[in-house]
Image (tube, rainbow, N blue to C red; front, side, top):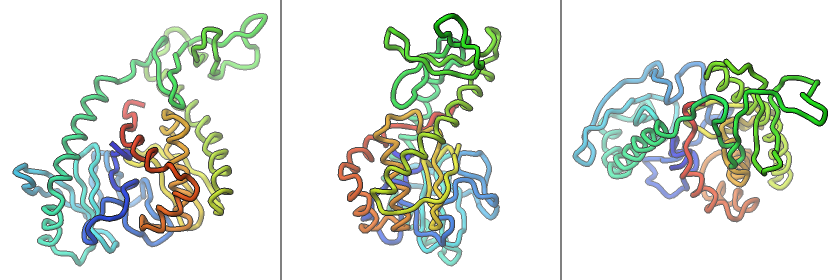
Length: 301
């Protein structure tokens, strides 16, 4: 599943019906696609946006609940996320037209909702037990947790008890957290998250600089996101948001998201011109985009 697909509308190519979009429609910049705007709750938060309304419709012989959000936009957008289906539509579009659009995409919606349910079951089964000896993914590789402090030649590292990633002689990567043996699981999880966010800012900055030069664009600011439904977004003024959970994925997939968002600084929609811009920088982007769909955001971190 792609953006993941927790947000099925971020990385979908163009070519859908003009009345229904499975990628975000053009927005009035800035920003193009805010991750958690102050006036609305992001999908997956368990809350509804002001002005939204819970409804249901029968699609492919299945009763499907959905949240309808009226928004300033030109098209009908559909997101399948952890909490189900969210539909965003212009204020002037009638409910009959909205539900006709849902019927047009009924098979797609029902299939993606089933995939999301299966994904949530698999995530629950794979939830990380935050304690010493547990492993978590970092840049596509397994890292083992050690609650203690890394040692250097001559004993314990005297500089600090800050988390330290060490490549052991065995080839295993170990993150020493510098926590007491009795640390609670929430302390362990929070320490790993803080470390990941610090790594993310440095790593993303380097990759943005690298690909911005190739794309011929200039980014102006980087913000880290913790959204449950988006890997990233871009604003016309050059601001980029990237989800720190990308650090779980291998570098090739992170690079795809970086190039995707940088390409929006040239084309703020998902038209053929946009995908051409992505392809000029990353010719193999379809393969990476497809692989990204197999990954999901880690909801337990």
